[in-house]
Length: 361
Image (cartoon, rainbow, N blue to C red; front, side, top):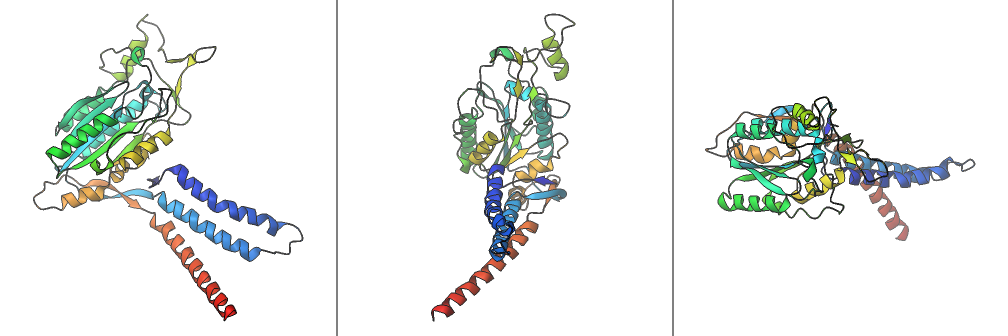
């Protein structure tokens, strides 16, 4: 089962907590010895209300399982891939590999599943740059993804997770002005780690320019170490990382980026920042999808509003590609439970109003 929340996870957790606190507070007087069960009816009412809010929070988390397909055309879609290439993307907490391995695999999956779309690749570290302008050559996109590397360690001086915003906005506006009829999807690949020492600034992207997409997050809260990268040519990324680290001597062990903020230097650890990723997603008007090893491409594609793709697919004269993997939504189950509880609450409220009206008559 997977989740594609319509609101940040911390907000859903806050709603659930706010629902439980009043019920727990009311529970203590009822359980106190000698209370005689006083207040049980009042407590029961709060428990039903708490259950209703929790069910609503669960529905907003959009649980679902893989299944089904979405027929789509890719001929009327521009896909912008925004990739974090800071040193933290090399952190070794993506299964048995680095976060960059997951980014490469996901870019290849998107290029394959949305073959026929026009793709543009923007990377950012200390600066943002267009690595590939809009092209229908999905093979070129996959090739570019396979040779993506982190920023050279010696050149790294801190980065902002929103550094690519102005350039992305510029490219989106240019695409809209040239082809206003096309949909524009944005996929942001990163870990959300801010290393400039300042809070992230606004992304500065007009959300009306974005028709769909997702913010794809990589890494764990436990974090991972990062190999130094010296900028050697990449034929095999893993081998290159070891070669770069072994430059001083053939038998040298791979060198990891060091944290020298304390008295003793130690291996630096990078951790995912889902809060920053959530802010970026809000700025773009798309959901966050935390990517883990083995996650199917369908999670990314469902997050990208496939209903928009389906409407394009049904338009006369369009060229179709194979059906995209879909997702069976289960949010309606807790939503229906919340509806039943809300109906009960409405009936009880109407009865009380009638009783008050009769008492004052």
